Image 1 (cartoon, rainbow over the protein chains, first blue to last red):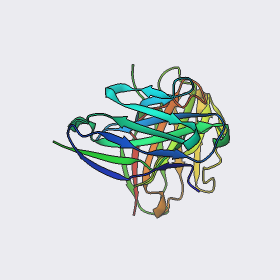
Image 2 (tube, helix red, strand yellow):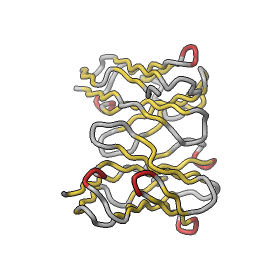
Image 3 (cartoon, each protein chain N blue to C red):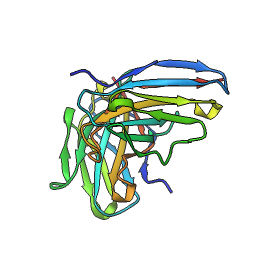
Image 4 (cartoon, chains in turn green, red):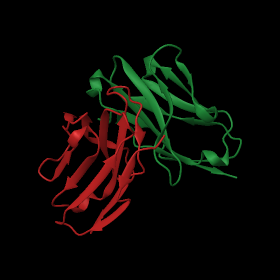
Length: 114
Length: 114
């Protein structure tokens, strides 16, 4: 069974549309949650992270993610996307039940049409 | 601050040949990771070093893959002999400490095995 599931592999949106990318993880217990982003031609970089506290986390470039423990989810959102948000987005989890390894989902390729 | 450096960026070899990838992490980062990213999938951890010791190599195909991090700084990942299914991007990442999940990635080394 996949440890980290990302619901959509490809998403195409027009500029100014709202974005929500789904992420679910398999195992309970204490987890740390991340979204990484890879812009075309660039390296993977951290977008935002959740360790504890407020389940609504704000990251760079207007992105936010909400941790819902009862649903094992950590969905990424942005109210209004821009062409420059075109990239591949990866959800990742670590924690004791993941062997303290950072485990990635398969990624979602987002294309924003101008 | 200089990022994680990797070389070569691209390598094409025939099956059964050998290949080596080099990584120089961010200065001061104790933990170094090698990930394999096959097209259409998320990065998968191959090996994790803490300084020059191996923390986790449970997903490293040890019959053909080897890695070392002499002196706790640079690292080399070797594949010998290569198989067709080794075609992937090999990502090196580093972090200040293990377990945080906040990884800094290099641009990757793309391997094509013919």
